[in-house]
Length: 316
Image (cartoon, rainbow, N blue to C red):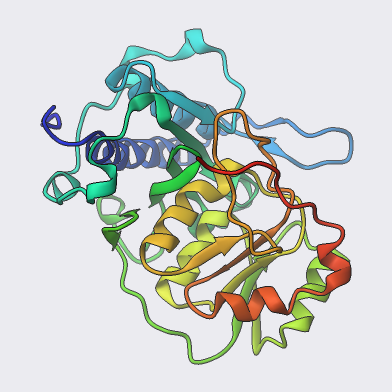
């Protein structure tokens, strides 16, 4: 059932995004099942940065669905794709009745479409997807208003894939600032567990983690998966003192984490900006935590901070 036009834009957008992310997850699972990954390399010489058929088809579905349902909306996706390949059969017109039933926070009841930017990572954790670490894979749809990440959807196509039949696989988390987060149950970690990159570990990243004296370090793929670990309580903090990740990696996770009281910033404790013209790379690294965020920020070595420029500009 299509969302009522009387519902505020943000509610309609998140409702649609939940259904669209679920559809993208189905596409991702089918391509893996069929064995037709069709991998190409996006990176330069010596850089492993794969793009698969799942990245391409999932992004086509997400972008075409959003642009069909919200004409004029600004959508920025990770993959550079040809617009003419957005086929009508990939358009998802469904909605999440759970989202439609909520009351929109007052500050977002009159959002104008021109102030909205949607950041999309169709397959966050592509490297892990190609290597069989399927539980690391997520679909990310983040909604920014006037440069601030205010809502997000994270879909895990392979949640419980080792123990559940295909029709029961996958889960979707979503959140809106001022409303909260849904689709997960948080359990506070009793130890200081840090989650960090699996494939882009550097000396500076390791030095930063060591300064925090963790009880345990988890090395996993995907920014979405790392923030899920914070939401689930598997990890205490997500630390990445490097320029590696992009706005489409952090917009949705940041919005959900902030909606439940957590924080995601750069290594200077500055929030990221998500305007349509902003630099795509997160130059200041990532420090994220469900609680005690300041503890982790304060322990980033000054020598590391000096190498990571904070983002210029500000949200309106």
